[in-house]
Length: 265
Ligand code: KIV
Image (cartoon, rainbow, N blue to C red):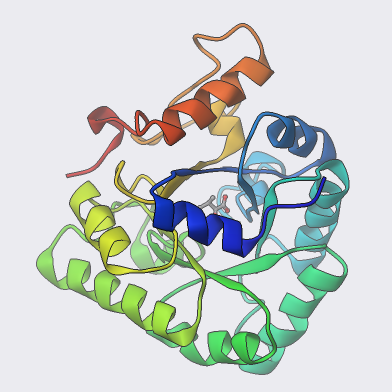
C-alpha cells in the first residue's frame, strides 16, 4: 500500500471531504491509526508532554523528533506523515534547512511543520526552494507559550484575529501546503479555511476547518491533567481502541466533531 500524498489531501479539500488527522509517536499506535482510516499523522512535539512528561513542548530535541518519526513511519503504510520541527530548531534559514532535511532523510517525514507567521517567511522560503513540503501552525503556538503567557485561546479580539488571518495568507503565499490552526474562535477558523486554497486543519478551531487533528492520547482519554474544551474522549462510548479511532474518523468526516461544546466563540 502506498502513502496518501499531498495531492490527495488537497483534492479532499477541493471536493469537500474532511481530513481526519491524529498525532502519532510510535509504531504500534501508528499501525492502529493507519488501519482505522486516519488520513494523516502529525508526529507532534506534544510528545514532550504526553510521552516524556514535560509541562511544555520546549525541551523536545531534533533527536527526539527523528527517533519518533522513524518509529511512526516504520509502523504505518498509508497515512501522510507531517513532523514537527521542535523549539529552537529553525532560528535561521540554514538551520531550518539542515533540520528539515534530517526529518525527511532520517525520520521519513513527508512534510515538516513549523510554528509562526511573518517571522517564518525566510525559513519557509528556503524549504520551498529546496522542494520540502511545509505545514504552518498559527493561533495558539505552543512553542511560544512563555510569550503568550499560557495556553490561551488566540484571535478573540479584532486585531489579533486579523493578524492571524493576514499571517495565514502570507504563509500560503510563501508556499506552505497545509496549515494547522490551534485554539481560535470557530468563526475565524471558518474564515481562514474559506479564504485559503490549501487544506486547513483545526484543533480547537471549529467544525468548518477542512480537517481536524487531536492529540491521540487526549482522543482516547489516556492523558491526565487539564482537559481543553476542544478535546473529546472517543474511547468513552466504544468497546475497544479500533472502534474509538473509527468513531473519531467518522465524526470528523461527517462534520459531527467538533460540536459547539468543543468550540470557542
Ligand atoms: O505537537 C502537536 O501535537 C501539534 C498539534 C497541533 C497536533 O502540533
